[in-house]
Image (cartoon, rainbow, N blue to C red; front, side, top):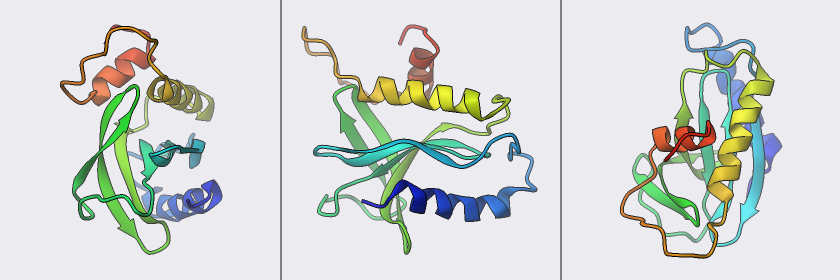
Length: 153
């Protein structure tokens, strides 16, 4: 598992190239929130950048997954999340799922961190015992944000 600092450094370099683009929000900085190992899954967190917010997933090294650029499903007790796989010389194999882009609706880092924290809380939540929830489809980005903002899913 790569450390949070290495991942953030990688995206800060990318940020230097993004700084002049209209999608870049200068009120935000690169931050990987909640980076942690999750048993059987690998490691994950929410990556905040001035241009996007992504679920960032590093699967276990021995995981059988499709090639870079293909989609893979991250299965958690809270649901299934479709991610795009990437292969990078410095970060190795990792995947991301777009949560928000562009980031212009966030006036500052505190608001972006609050949203990222709520997303983490929701995706890492273990459902209460009861009837097995339907897993007939992937949880959409819209449904995840609706939950994070307190609406019905």
